[in-house]
Amino acid sequence: MTTPRLGLKRVKVVALAVRDLARANSFYGETLGLAPASEGGRQVGFELGGTVLMLKDDWYGTPTAEPNPRITLECADARALEAALRGRDVNISDAVELYDGAHYIGAFLDSEGNKLWFCSPK
Image 1: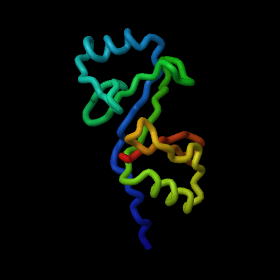
Image 2: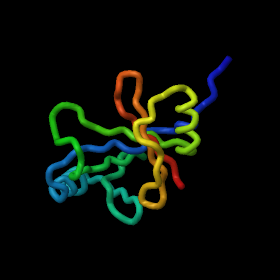
Image 3: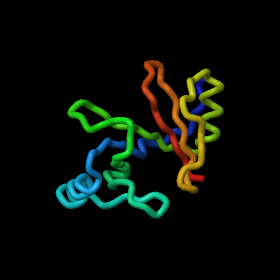
Image 4: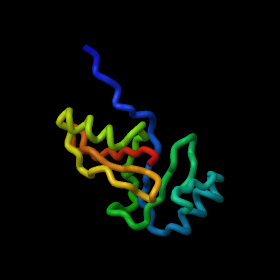
């Protein structure tokens, strides 16, 4: 018996903690030459090969030489994915909520306790 696909598509967002958002925006936009990425009419980071590199200056984490990204997986329907994951006894750490009026976002914990976010358009 095959397991049905859950509708996961790709890594959509990798979030990085920053101390100084203006300095980080200058680095990624001017130094690296990346194009801005926007959601809900505001810049949230930079485009990088179809993935958004999101910069977070108001986050729980702080910049470090050790890996610190937040990974967000794009899916076809975040609400349906949450239900499917619950049906597989996956720990939903953050129930799906509407974010910025245009995206549904939620998160689950993997088998090791790592949090993975998922999202879909409204």
